[in-house]
Image 1 (cartoon, rainbow, N blue to C red):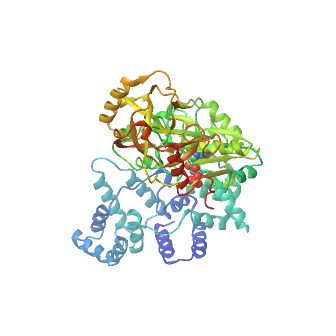
Image 2 (cartoon, rainbow, N blue to C red):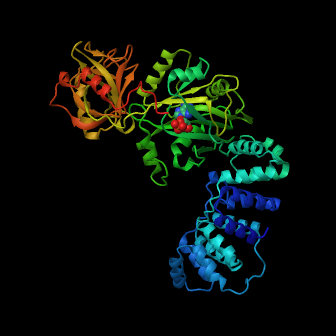
Image 3 (cartoon, rainbow, N blue to C red):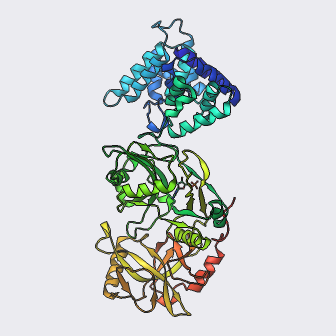
Length: 593
Ligand code: AMP
């Protein structure tokens, strides 16, 4: 196909607004393509050169394209700039300035495939002199284009093609072509294949070669991110349990970044996000941790990447990991500042075998068999439950441990991995919580943990407790390792070293065993996201619910040492109960539908 026909199609599409009209126009257009033009056309209609997950970019900016256009139009750059300022669209200006040109200088019209190949070459040109090389190549293309071709080529180069042709519209158009009268069935089949192989160029080629049957060959493949399976929601744990037929696996629902990890035979790691972007270069520490984590290769696994406190190993709020996204520089420093851990929960490929059709229990079991865990790679905590109290206890534990809830997973024989599907084989149950506790809490140090890494010479985290005046004891509320500067850690270490005990003081009630115990004396002011019920911390045990204490989620030191307060003047368990009950929303309240 000539590039001109493609550009004219772009022109036409940019004038149509109705989706159905675009769809039928597109299917007509796609039908006319020569087989080798199918992938380029499918990518370029979306303004891309390759599927998005490959992250292929042209690497040209406005100035470069302007220069190339000025050369092709034999025009002064300054004047062209004025012209572009007037139209606000360099594509439109290209159309205008080239319209005056009488004949195409080279005579031979551009082929679509030729244009595509040149653009790919431009995209892969790097290093010294690459800018000049790109400008030259674009100028040559533009000398061979008609005004309408130039308009859409310029827009494409600038990433401003904006035809509004989304993947889904192209799937619709393909279904119209290959549906043989049953559009719905074809659409479903094509989307299923596309969920496993998000390369539309390849899907288009398979369809052309073998129709819908040709898509049967599509399977999960290394290096191509599978569209992730998603979870439905229910309003209560009872409903979740009922929906699952009375027995289910519950996993912690970590609040981080979903990652799909592809490791090839040689141990090369690629990490894809939920939206199929390649995150590998942004997380070199995660890549390194996953490199040697599997006994069988290749594999594709899935998990959640979560920020952890380097001192306590406890989970940190999601916002911290978002500070690591999109960075190009200082990657190593930020990796030590905001270390992350990956909690794996699924296995999609082992060796050459796709595990998508296998039931969840088998996938999880095989995942556990083939993974070597480390401080940075572990499995999502889980439990098989069949009673509501067990489920509730697990859910509360998940919250205390810094998770946002649980994901229930079906154990049924048909619990396959549904790429790109939201269904009841997975059900999430989380709860809304306030972002920040409105008040601070004064808690007492009852134990300390030796620091790690940069903090190795000090205590790096502390076991904190509240005072219980009725029982005259201190019961634990949280571990805290966040919010301390070096000076504070040094002075606390000095004070605590003198007071360190080897055994738990009788006045302290705790289910934890810190590296050293201390008599409750030093009071720290803490902030946190909220108070939640905890099966492990002992503060206010049984006062709100039998068998549960209270915990402070995502605690951090405010910087205020309350030396003006004695241990008994710290926040009491009674106050904490009142704070808990006055929080905006409650644990028992079901999430909004
Ligand atoms: P949501 O984003 O609320 O639709 O919840 C689904 C997301 O929860 C998934 O995309 C994962 O990123 C995340 N998640 C955290 N822990 C798990 C888990 N154990 N199993 C599945 N998804 C999980």
